[in-house]
Length: 241
Image (cartoon, rainbow, N blue to C red; front, side):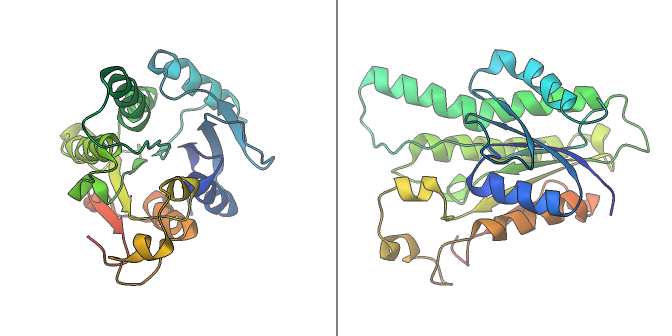
């Protein structure tokens, strides 16, 4: 297995933490970027607000310096995400604040990080073998009346993934994939305030998704997915679409 240099956003808890654990277990070099300091000593981390777009280039440089050799990352996992529960109509100031906060964290920051990640890898040649994995959501495909901004931001990230995969400059050099889970056993799921019956009502397997299951799919994309599958979205929904 090729040893990778991997940057994971939102790696201090939830899906991100499960991804970090799985990739470390495989012997990869992993650094995380998170809003909260990582409580774990097994991974190097940079603490920052991913919604502060102007600082992300410097944050990426700081993350590189945490590894033994200051070389570019060859895998980027854009996992960090926030969700606020709201329904229209909303008060103007609250709407603007939540829209900006959600879009900056869930969509704009992955775009900015991907841009600088690719710039670090230039020039692209036959030896380039890089990967970008974006965590989206089932609601990116079908929308959600209670997660308006979250659903919109994840739909934008899904389309960004597909659009990047169509750039021929990256053909067989950089792969782009998205992963779209339904309800996953995380703090975000808990914050929804729904009962287990409500959460699993339209999930055929009868339960929510475990973080380790998402991490296993991300691991496959990092290590094994063929470049011909670039642009694909991997649904982890227990049959619920």
